[in-house]
Length: 288
Image (cartoon, rainbow, N blue to C red; front, side, top):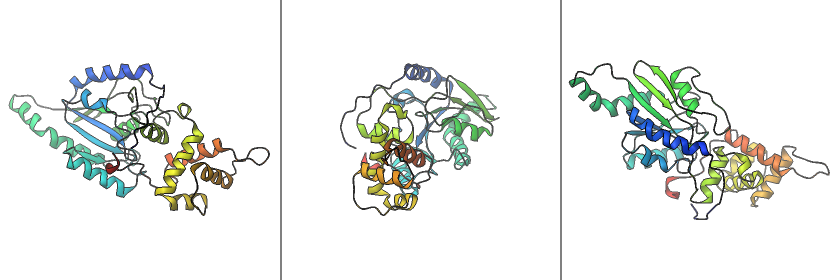
């Protein structure tokens, strides 16, 4: 990660309200499910969450693992386990990892429930708080685990609003909260990674710049994926030139034969987010 500062005015007032809400809600639950984007586990981790939920056991869920590089995901799993942090890769679309999550939850809370039974408290229902940044897939995760459309979802950040309790079954209840970011990014790379994956709105950062930066990264780390997807024979070039080549291949042409770089960038970002280019991870534990 570089240490360049970025000055982005994006922090909506409702996110500060959500932080205060989490401080109150944490008293109501037994455990926290922290969803991270498996493609950017470092950048999609809100550092404020640690102190907001520090007194509760937590499981990190690497969501969208079906879109991430599987070798990189294994490195992240090893990283979290080496720091004694329970972690499970999941896919909210297919439900992969959800059964493992239920089993791990019971294991982590077994001592607490044993003590409650000894006090005569029976019928323990696990109450879990679901937290994460916008567009990390919290609502899709809840809908999958509950096996019904319990929350609103969308591909734009900030769809979920307000407090929502969802009963999964007779042993588990989830408390959903809106996605929250933090007031100031420590470096530009975090901002760009969040923008690449759609956690912050495309309008906040220049979309052509985003497309060119993503081209730079993919050329360096996943060149074959680019060549196959866009039928390119890549020679070393900068991101804008590569974005222009993608625009040519996909017919992003305006009057006079000029390449519409904005249209090409939007196409590239959409296809990256949908996993159409390939299974790609943008950061590794060693880079942090």
